[in-house]
Image (cartoon, rainbow, N blue to C red; front, top):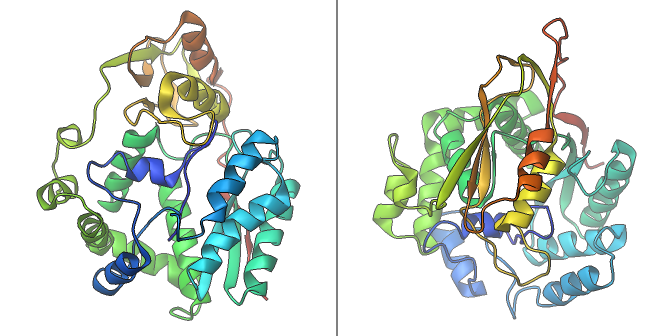
Length: 339
């Protein structure tokens, strides 16, 4: 898969993978083919020879305030996938407070544009529409999200993240004809996680893309100290619940914007990011908490967050009275299958 980097408050797959020491996302076409032959999967970025125009267009979108241009987004995403000569493609299109498109209708317009463009190039393309009002999973930030992904591959991940993974994977299996239904596809993906097959495949991919064998093995072992391999932030601080109640909301956009300012993200293409900066959410939506419970652990470097930044983080948490019940909502709102 040819993937991309984060910009502004949005995360990037390549930034997350590069938080793993040695992981090389710059591979030649020949190297990609070799990895695919030996492992069966790889995740890389664009190079001077592989979709070279995308970097130029990406920088121009930023400079001309057209980051949210639907045709340019479609071209950027589908051009990379078309260069891979894919037979099938499933896309996760976000909507909500922390997404590029805030409402379902706008996100659906983008999803349909992507699906139509992909199918027009001969790729069997589908998409899901998923909510991005709150965070997905319990971690935000590059290294922390890698840890959470590894925990998920070990069968210990958050429910919402597993829902997203199995829905996307199940849809892809159905579109390629490996299963006859979405539910069967979801079951097959769940089995791959439970059996450890998915984790073993990721370990093999890490090693094939430059990660030291012992480091890859350590990250994928059942009991491991991830920070022996991944960079840990110099400082951590905890935020406490100001009162008791029910966790009604955790504003994902506010968290992302503050963490971006603390170094987890970049404002311009090409800027470095600090892989160790991030946050762990220690409560879940709908949970009943008492006053003084740690709800967020902030990982940061120097300089320390300002009082205003800490206050913004605290404001991301909304508590309701014990008599209130937060209705569980499905993360995935709609599936768009190819014709």
